Image (tube, rainbow, N blue to C red; front, side, top):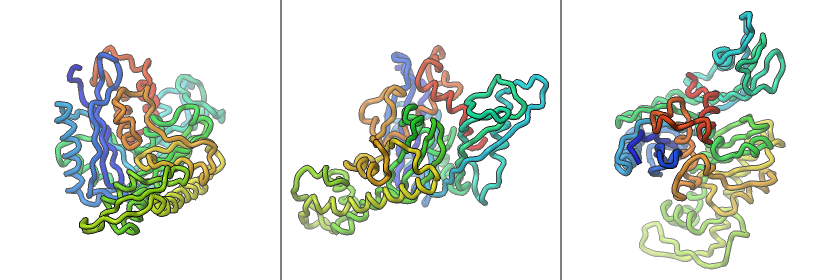
Length: 416
């Protein structure tokens, strides 16, 4: 494989960073994952920078190791953010077509979106994403792409995500300090949903839930359109804390017990048995029953799902999602989907990974914990000027991720 430019998606998670690096494969004419890493970061709390030096050190470690493995520099870096500082809402914009021909152009559409963005923001907030939901021409609604049509009044509905400028600036400093350039930054749930949900799920009404360590991201799609998104400042690290406290062991031991033996629903408790638990000082080991671990985990998972249920109820779309897709590292725990069905009232819930037709990769990286980072890399491949990354004869329009790139032209990244 020739040395084409390396594009990377960096997911700024809850206490960790995850990165996927990919490039165009000339042999298969597809985007191919070359390397991936997930590393803990003490400088992040809830997706926000708490220590710029620790965060910068983690960036150096994860991106540097990927560059060494691929034997090339990262030329394009796309960063996904999350956290309680993010707020999302819908807004409406209009634009009058005063020309004689009345034919709507891309510039007219952009001006309508700019008018939708012209709204008061909280102090220290800035726009991160603007996702177009739909257009109307002379009060005729349900138009997905008005370019080339005629009309006098163009209206647009958009879904806007804002975030703390202070946090965004601190994150940018932490990444740029080792010498890396950020090409784009945006709310991670947007590309994640586009790569994990199917079009049929978005049309029928779907809820996507990204279960992180310190945050949970919730998105609701109705009639193929993102209607609601929100980050909840609680996550699966609470389970680790509960296990550590009640089993009298270190957080690292508790995390290993959670990942190896943890289940959240009784039917997944295969057999009764005992689990060795090291003491806090590591000198002694005591045994506890597997059912006791379930008794600790189940109430906490139920509490987390109830937080999601309250978020959905407050959204105003409680009765619209029919199916659910759970992704992120927390989705790997057996029984999570059962709790989503029971507590959220969904008809069907599945564990979600990036759709395999969008990218070529080893099975290792088709894992929920890599889904967001992989989605960011797919976004990069669909951007205008992709031919820089690979063969200039590459036909974006005939590929799945080329089509994804066309969709993203309707997304105003970082409000600019």
